Length: 135
Image 1 (cartoon, rainbow, N blue to C red):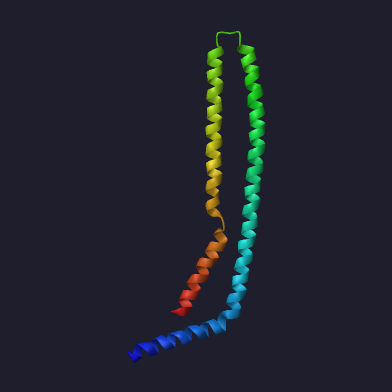
Image 2: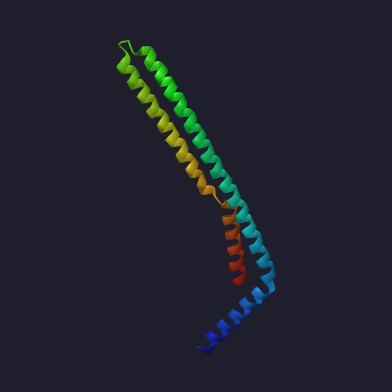
């Protein structure tokens, strides 16, 4: 029993000695990792702002274009026998455009998986290094 306590005691002293020797370097490294996370967060914020701006502008322009294009097409074909078919084709085109926009938006949202990848990789390397030093 005393053997296991002695082994545990030496392990704790070894761990304390490790942290005493490496504390300044670890603190510097933590500071650098936090700065990296801050930079990546700023980049992510800018990406999201750009996505929102592009989405709003695209939505407005597309709505105006399709509204006026539809009005022109319907006005030019109103007195023809193709009135119903024209309305159906216009609605189908709107549906296809909406589906394409949905797919694009879904892809943009999936890009969020790459957020903070450098910070996560750095933290994983740090944890692996600390585990190797402790054991």
